[in-house]
Length: 203
Image 1: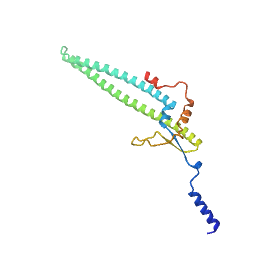
Image 2: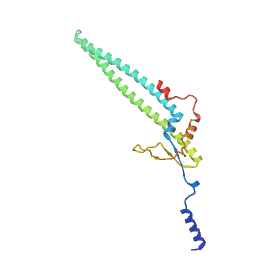
Image 3: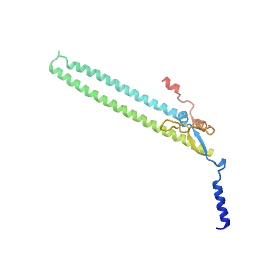
Image 4: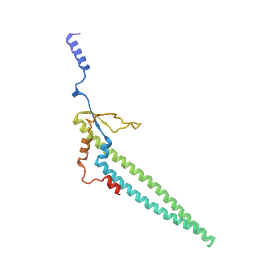
């Protein structure tokens, strides 16, 4: 092997073995994703919209339950009337059929309430998931932008927990915590009036 080539190979080996300079090391940033999610104005807006929709469902269900109670009261009266010995057997039979028809109506109302309840729960759960995913995507986009501008190779979620509810990030000195800066960016477009937890409790 020629000496120039040998010297080049030795130099390459030495360079690869040398520790990277501090400025070339990977920067690691941190964010508290829970704080970002809870503090984002769109999360509060989505929560308020979900509560309004849930309130509408509750109102409708109450109306259905009121109708069911009325029908149940009518059925009891008709059943008592069908057992009235003061009237003829023919009349009692007629009233019995009327009571049976009311009982079928009761069963239909029960089924309608059950279907409505399941549909309402599913609708709210799907909307909540859709809004949650949309908000998380927006947060991730801001995190990516801030990370790239700051030269961070990776950004970790300091609020993440493992399957045993133990914090994944056991320690960081807080120097590269990007949470507050990102939260300011997220809320830069917030409208003037936002629903607050206090408003929700008053309702």
